[in-house]
Image (cartoon, rainbow, N blue to C red; front, side, top):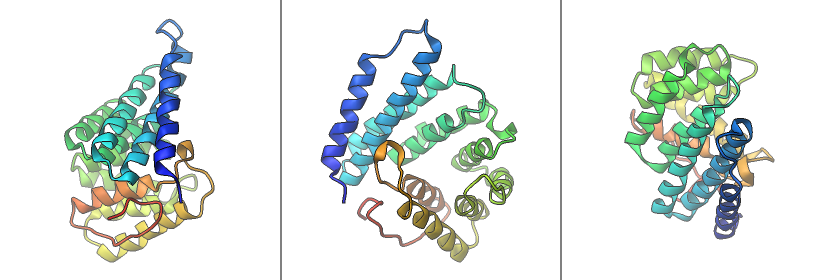
Length: 221
């Protein structure tokens, strides 16, 4: 079991240290890299706060992560879809519906829906689901669920959410996503939380799809 208080303190320390060493705008490349690291640390802190049941702290840290990732995207290499994905996920995890919709609109404005890569289409699918544009989201979900470079359980779950009708299929798919987290050895910032499962369950819940999941990688309750 993780020591969530200690891990939160570690992530907050990483964030403070990184912020103190943030390059100025003249060094765009180094600045975007450091902003990404700041986003990662803030996200890790937010996940810890979620596991501790501290909704206020989680909202603050996750919102900060979304902001830093959006800032870093401006000068990031083409195809850096992890940043928009992270921004959308962070706001969903924070329970901030308005900010999640804003992040989703921004993600589509960056051209995610026109991306050919599976990670770009994943970004588009998440954004479209947040905005309630399920038919459009399903097109992307159906494409990535069979792509060899994308985790099939996540694609399957997204497709079930977009369809909104197969409750059994959704449960089977999201259980497979959770299993993939429980059997992995590495996590972002070394924070063992099944964040994607929480995000997918949030999107599904808005469509009346539920799954009774229990894991040390999920918040209690």
